[in-house]
Length: 313
Image (tube, rainbow, N blue to C red; front, side, top):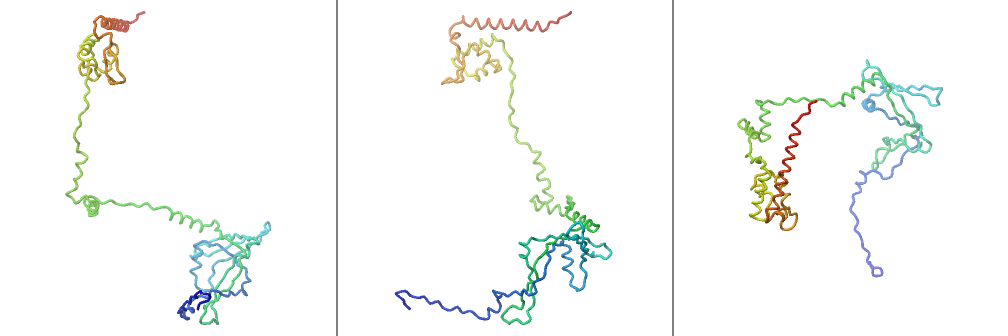
């Protein structure tokens, strides 16, 4: 049907079986509160006590005894619970009932709800009805007292929490378990027992050891003659080439070179030694170098003689 040019969409009716509603819960249930005027105590009990009480199915079985004592020094009475032991020969377990009174704001916020079988309920509704059992008035806690039964239970719990030491006997070489372990790791059977025995004993190719040459110092005058002769061959030398030609220790060679040559530290001749201009084309300047050597030798000899002399009083 068109109304002002707008079409109304007609949705088809869903085919729903009416019998399906019989198996669904009622969305809104009525709770009976006529008998819910009682006061309920919420008690937290130990786990082993809960398991023992839950296993009792016979009526008339004594679960525990509650004793209340009036304390003249306190307004709240003292309450104790005695629970018979599972073994009649063992002493009973003792608990103190610590009571906590909630404040007025939260005293009516916790309720206990139960279900009962409905006597006259229609076939299309649930067979049970919800009943308000009571309102929580006190919160209590069963606190175990120090007794022999409590100490025994604590010792048992401590022993159970300690990890046990496990001992495992390893199989020997001849056992089947050892062979299986070898197969699982890929080592193989008995013929491969020594397959890897030579790995630690093998030695790789010996590398060349660094050769240390001991070079004896030549006299200073002799080394100066060699250096002057080499500088006549070419003007610049590297210390490595000079050491190879003179066969002198590097430190001693550099000390003598510093007196007659200059080390270039930059440019194209970086790292090269070049003879000083004073000693290039004349022999007169070289005499001073030899005289300096003679003076130094005399001073060394005098110091050696002074060391050899001993003072006698």
